[in-house]
Amino acid sequence: MTERHTIPVADDESVVAVHHEADADDWLVFCHGFLSDKSGSYEERCERAVVEGYNAIRFDFRGCGESDGAFIDQNLSTRIADLQAVVDYFEVPSYTVFGSSFGGKTAFHAAVDDDRIEAIITRAPVTYNRAFAPAREAVDSAGVYQYDEDYAIDERFFEDFDTYAFADVTECLDVPVAVFHGREDASVPLSDSLEAVGELAADAFLQAYRGEGHRFSESAEDRLREQTFDWLARTR
Image (cartoon, rainbow, N blue to C red; front, side, top):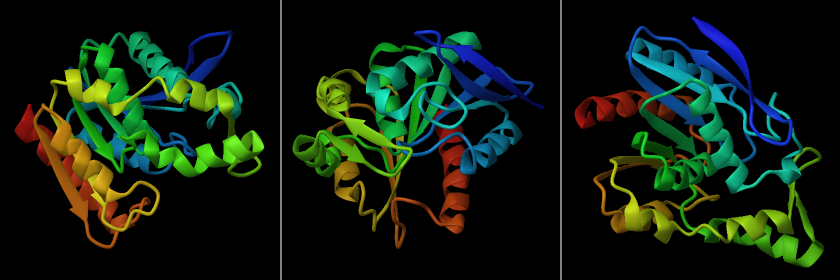
């Protein structure tokens, strides 16, 4: 069974979440990427999670999908706050968080202060801030970086972004981590994940997919789901 929820967050704004209910006590919460939303592969991942015995939640961050707000006003802090508001709303006692791309960075930094997170799974995660260097250069030059007519960021994004460093994660993270990354990723290089896994003190698993870029093919997505739940079964 699935149920759509409108969840208040801040400044009279709300985010929209979909709960895929399972008769179980385990929870898996999905954080979408930077220019993405909760649709598509997230619905399929949630459906698989229910089969595996997890309550699953997918939601749109502010400025994305069905949620309130303008994309240009969002940043990493608002995304962490949105995740926490969703988890609070459902009164989740503990959970695994899955983050794709920028959702991975959201998951990592949320785990610094949220001891309800018991494991982290990421796909092509943004870890080091250098992944946003081209966008930063564009903002420094023009004041704004326009991805397309719906998505843009300005200097406010980087004022917030610069307060987060992956060193904050490596210093305190103590939950198991799984990283899935395409070898041909031109947006977030595999080398970033290799370096990040090497710096983590927590147990970490890294799977590199030959021939895959930042967006996974359908076959790679199938493998990702299989390996995700295999890893969770071994880790728990």
